[in-house]
Every structure is written in C-alpha cells, then in structure tokens.
Length: 346
Ligand code: DAH
Image (cartoon, rainbow, N blue to C red; front, side):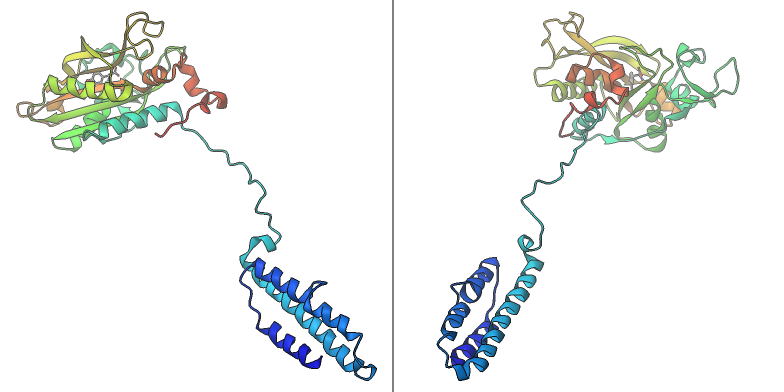
C-alpha cells in the first residue's frame, strides 16, 4: 500500500495536460468516485490497525496533491481556453449596425470609377469661389444673367450694381475647377472634378439650392468632338448598361464652342416612354462641348496648339434614374428610412 501511494504520487507529478479533454481524463483517473484514489480509500479498510495512522496520512496527502495538481492545471488551461474562463463563447454577439453610403456618394463614386478606368484623374476646387473662376475666365459676358443675384449666392460683392472678377460667391457649377486645373497644369490634362454647387433656387421636388456635379476636362493636341462623343458613349454604357444609347443636341454655353446637351435613352422604360422621361424615351444628363479658345487663352493654354473637350453632369439626376427617386428633397433630409435602402460596392 505504501509503495502504491508513493508510485501514484510520482505519477501524478509527471502528468501533463494539453487540453480540457486531458484534464477531464486526469480527473476521472485519479479523483472520481471510480478513480484510483477512491479505490485506495476502499483498500484502506483492510490496513492493519497499527498502520492505519501512517497510511491514512499518506493517503490524505495523495488526495490533496491530486486535487492541487488538478486545480493548477485547470487554471493554467483557463488562460488559453475560454471555455474554462467563465466566458460563454456561444452567446450571440452584440448586433453591429453597419452604415450605408448616401446615394449621391454611391453614384459619384461610380462616376469616378468609370472615368478613372480611361485615364481621368480627380481634381477638386473650393466651394467658396471668386467671380473670376466661376464666370469671367469661362467667357461669361459681364452682363450674363447667371451673374445675377437671383441665380447666384454672393458672399461679398465689390459693387452693388456690377459684377466684378473679385466678387466672392458660392460656385454655381464645378466648371470653376476646370479653370484652376488649366491654370495649374500643362496639357495633356485629363481630369474630372466632382463637387457641390449652389444656386439661388426655390426648393421643390425638381430643384434645390444645393446639388452635385461632376465636371470633365480633356485637353491635348488634336482632341476632337468625336473623342468627346466616344468618351460620353463609353460613360453612358458603363453607367446605364451596354444597351444605353446617347444623343447630342446642339446647345449653348459661353465656355464651349460648339456646345451640346446629351440625352441618354431612358433606362426605366428602355426608350419606350414613361413618366420619368415624359414619354420621350430620352433623359438629359449633361452639357458638353469643345473648350472655347477664349477659355484656353484666359487660363494660359495656347489655343493654336491645343484643343479640348469639357462636360458637366448632375449627380442627383442620375441617382434619381438609377434608384427611381422622384423627389430631390429626399437627398437632403437625412431620413434614415430613405438612406438605409442603399447598399452598394461603391
Ligand atoms: N457648367 C454647366 C452647368 O452647370 C454644365 C456644363 C456644360 C459643363 C458644358 C461643361 C460644359 O464643362 O462643357 O450647367
């Protein structure tokens, strides 16, 4: 009996456990009711009375050593195994609310993605601008109606009657960024400029005083109207599907000559006619043209050597088409029920 006790004591000292299974096996082998130590306590009955005291003490010592070993192994394991640390890993986690991007951001990012695939960089300019960048350098005549207080939010005006290149205002279009890019870079230039613009309009379902545009500018030697058309066709098909058609209608902008407006075939009714396209099958999405020589010269670019095209598109209109939104005001109200409907890779 004494030998058995000391053998088991040595054996216990040498036990190693790697996981909870080993630990449980240790418990079953030595400490359970059917374990080795219990058996020894059974045998204890047969020990001669004279030896009982000594054997009893050793047996209790063995049991204590086994228990101590068990507890220390258990706490060692708890450091690496969460099931022993009191943390219940099977509990469901706290729900994590994922946000969603604003539809205007989604469409803007998609436009940037499409143009970046054909070599356009992104440039930005200030929202608070001067008359020079928004109007004068873009060939707007001094008396052009866009310069009227009725259309433009002025921050400070040099004269109450006449507009002046030094007047400070909120930009009414992103074409002002064209001017800044041309002033700061030499051709070839191939860039788009997304941003917010401001106009003094009454707010309704179809008009807002703040909206978003993306301006495009491409200047190099021998850039032609055909290049413009092909670039816009590529864009329309990437944005609205490979079946999309475009149509260019003659128009007028002071900063382009010739100028055009571009319609895209209505993606809602596939050109058949619906209330979104007002039964025409077409939707106007942008203005464009060949950059006016006066604009090139005003921005320090030699108009005999270089030509270029420019375009300006509204983002809201395209987001309305893509998501069938029928009221511009929804974009600005921050109503979570509206915003959480938009999920996108962009
Ligand atoms: N700036 C014009 C607008 O806000 C849009 C535009 C038209 C931009 C023709 C251009 C362009 O670059 O070439 O209505």
